[in-house]
Length: 199
Image (cartoon, rainbow, N blue to C red; front, side, top):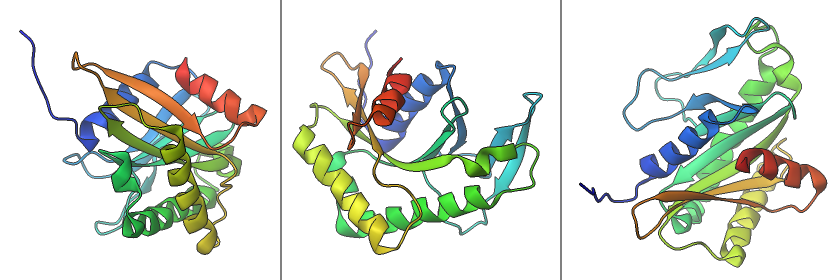
C-alpha cells in the first residue's frame, strides 16, 4: 500500500537527520522536534559516553538542528522551514540569525564540560534546511545565503559567513525524499564539507 503525505518542516528535517545518522563523520548534538522531550544539547566524551552539555530555558529560542564533525572540527547550526521562500521572509531571517548567533555563543562558551571537551574551539557555520517538491534554482538558494549573511553581519555575529550550507529535502513524484546539498562557497573546505555530508 502506498501512502501519501504532505511535505512539512518536520519531514524535511527528519529526512536530513536520518541521513546524518547513516554517516560516520557527522553526529547530531541537538534537534528541535515540534513535539519532543525537554530540550537539551548532548555530546560525547573521550570514552564515547554521551552526556548533557546544555539545557535550554523554557522560553529560550532554539535552532532546529546542530550537527558536529570531529574530523573537520566543524559545527553547523541549522534553521529549517518547510519551503525555501519561508526562510526568506525578512522577519524570519532576522530571528533566525539571532538564534544561530546565540547558539554559537553558547557552544563557544562551554569550556569546562568533559562531554564537550575542546569543541568550543571548533569553527561554527550556519546552515539552512528546507523542503521542496521541485529542485530549487541555484540563484534562489544564493539569494537566501546572501540574506542570512547580511543579517549575521548586521548583528556583528562571530559566525564565519564565508561558508554557509544548504540542505534541500525534495519530495519526488514517487513520494520519496532526496537530499540536495548547497554552499555559498567554492573553497576547498566548503567542497570538503559538502562531500562529507553527501556520502
